[in-house]
Length: 44
Image (cartoon, rainbow, N blue to C red; front, side):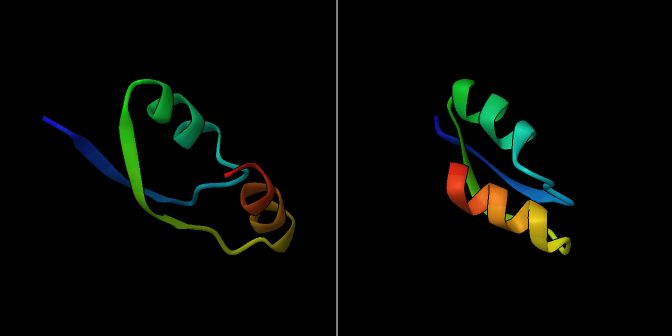
């Protein structure tokens, strides 16, 4: 069974990184701060 999640207030993506390691798939990541969006986009 595959698990998915939605990350609200995702910041640079630390939670997504951890959940990805636990085999979760991020369906949506929501962030408002431009610097965090840029970092998230570069990493993920």
